[in-house]
Length: 110
Length: 418
Image 1 (tube, rainbow over the protein chains, first blue to last red):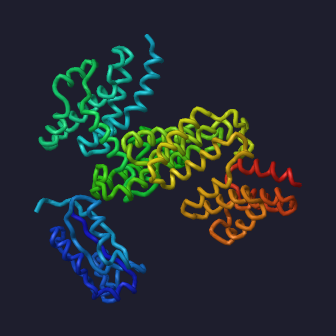
Image 2 (image 1 turned 135 degrees about the horizontal axis):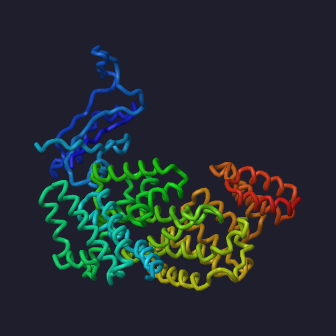
Image 3 (image 1 turned 135 degrees about the vertical axis):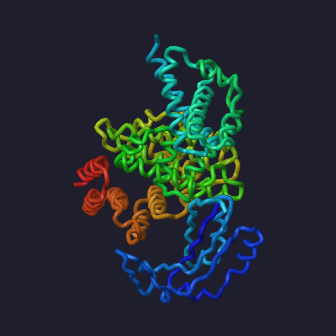
């Protein structure tokens, strides 16, 4: 099954932005569960796009005004939710932020 | 002929077999809705046929095969992958299918160990920590115990539609989020087993704390919890905490006839008529607990059961071994409620003045607003002869109490000191 791990944190998480994921990345690469992912620039540099009645609306900043913002994401492919939980729990960001596990909509086979 | 007796038998069969039929069908089809539907239809077929044909020798096997055949029909109609169909079809041989078709006896569709495993898988999946607690409880009651959505809704005082949504959402999450249908591997058991026990204990408490005259469905939750916990101890004989939880439940229910007066007033432990406790049940629970404790792997349920056993085996309230109870409470995680109970035990062991001092330490904490805190205070003050202060504390407790039974009891106590 494929899951997107959304790595979230408040402003204090920015301090960890350059930490990297060292051992975690190494282990997950060798297990072959990571399909992609990246860290993100801070939400202050985000632009939100909406089109309503054909009109383009832009907002400076993230879509949701919450304390927790997405700081990165990883796409994984693993056996089931138990394995996804294990992978997420080992991620360093789980120690200071939160990680949301979202199963992907089942699309056509690639 | 003997219609009602078949009805009674069917009722028993339903209770005993429902969880297993559903568990097996989920294992075969991977589809929770389909499994439930087919189980439901199989029981309906039994209800029609058994009064005429007689009850088969192995009703569980008959029901499982009948449900499986219905699932095959549905899958065939929906033209799902041939592989899945073959998988489901492979479950029994053609003779069994024929036997089911004419309502005769059957061999078990799967060997016993697989059946046991299926129900355990279902239990762990229903209680998966990625599901909300209410969802785990509802799912356990629906799929394992076979309560209808309406019954579960009534038990938890929510509308049937809301409960139905809750169940559907949980089943969808299991399917779409990839919650595995299995008994977790060994390294996950230490964290997953307590999750299962927590659901069963919550179920038991929901049922047990329902006052007399409350909805029958609510009280039967306690029976369901005991049945499922007993099943869990059969399926996991090496898990002492499951046995501890079962002993705890049995020790509580052995006092069921004395906990309230006929008009629903709460009777505290020290005033209960001990001659009406079910002593045989207490003895059985005690020997279960003793055997369990002997394994030397105590946990919170075993400790709580040991506390319940101290109460249940005291011939009179005055004989209660309070120092032992206080020592047992000290072994539990010191949550505010445990700390309160420990203070009560110490107060009764070493004197109300000491107990009162411990209560003062708790008053500033998260128990402020919990009626048992002023109620306990009042009790110690009464024992010390400080009746005016006791009366004030009883009044404070009455204001905070949650049920009529509790309020009536506290008012009676208040009348004694004023």
